Image (cartoon, rainbow, N blue to C red; front, side, top):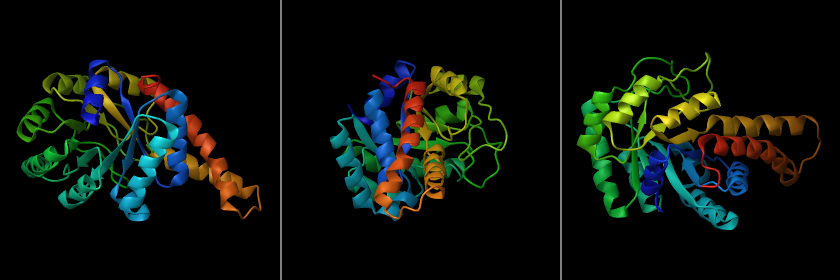
Length: 274
């Protein structure tokens, strides 16, 4: 099964795949342990920053080896690819799915850029995700720029994209105010578009609200902030209570809390045992 087939199945069965970012060996280990424990598919995400930090080939090799070692069904996805050039590098590196994010550009430019990536990706047989609307990134203000059903239908038709990240009230990073997803808007978008929809910025959204979004068209739920925040909080706690200098003994202690959190998330999206 490839990513496009996975997302289509999730949409039809009203469940979602949890797409998890990883940043180093320890966060990757937490993801893989949780996926194995819950028997969930693992969609491993890398951003430009993580690729620059770990190196493209090394990050991909780590992910592929972990998928094999833990015996899980797994794929590698480019999260928020900000340029056609980065997407091309990831396609050549063997990614199973890529996201081109031109959402901050004018609609027509977003369409043109996304269509170009779709055409580029077809010979590779990979899934292509794009974003339409305003999903606030780290440091940006929330609110405004929600995706509309009419624009979504037009965007999908003109680009041929396989999955669409929509702006319905979520944002990246932690929320300063209680998040509220516009489920009515999501329902309209889902009815107007035949492809799986994606929820970015799920960290901090109540589980019941995420489940309601899944029931109304979301087939992929992205999780990043809670992973790195959980790891760093656990690591700081360990370091404050220890004089140990061997990172090989310290870092693994921060993996378990993240793994437990991820087990809950896999169950939340309905992917456990699927």
